[in-house]
Length: 211
Ligand SMILES: N[C@@H](CCC(=O)N[C@@H](CS)C(=O)NCC(=O)O)C(=O)O
Image 1 (tube, rainbow, N blue to C red):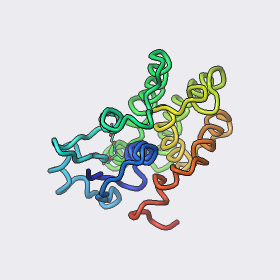
Image 2: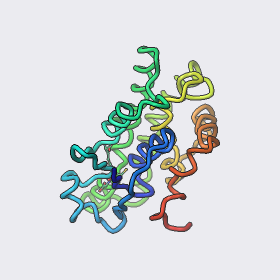
Image 3: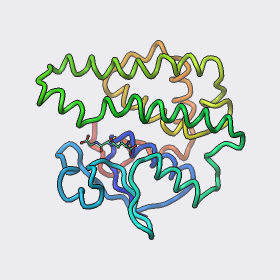
Image 4: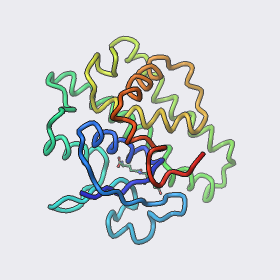
């Protein structure tokens, strides 16, 4: 399998985490979002011009949640889906809150449109970014305060954690004040202490730009 990825892409980071957890290897292809490579030849891989994309024997899959579902189906061990259907639904709800309700508003193309077409300032762009992260993190923090354990869903690692860690990485990158979110920070630290996560982090990618 080949994974089209960019080191800072949170959607790619979700897939990298799941692959690392399951011990699945793939050949990486780096799509440089800083130089807008996603708008050129890469569109033959993914016509939407977004990473990640995964090539399989049957064809190409895009959308990180679909890729993760495919990986779970064909590489069920160790499992990511939870045995309890209610807990699995809760895990997927957190994943979708992040992937569908927060991330799309703060994606590169949205921020570029705001600054280049609508001419908003850098300060306004950051306010937009922070606003939508807080809108997602505030209710999530409350949920985690009431129900989490070591991970988002009690002590079971789930798709919720795989989506949360990249979103926290991105929030930190944009300087979001994380102090109102002790449970989110705690879970982020717990997951990142797991040895297998090291290979999936943005810093560990071959296309990473040294800080
Ligand atoms: N819903 C998609 C989102 C994919 C996505 O937005 N990827 C971002 C990087 S995290 C991207 O390629 N952005 C390029 C752009 O905005 O031009 C998924 O989960 O795979």
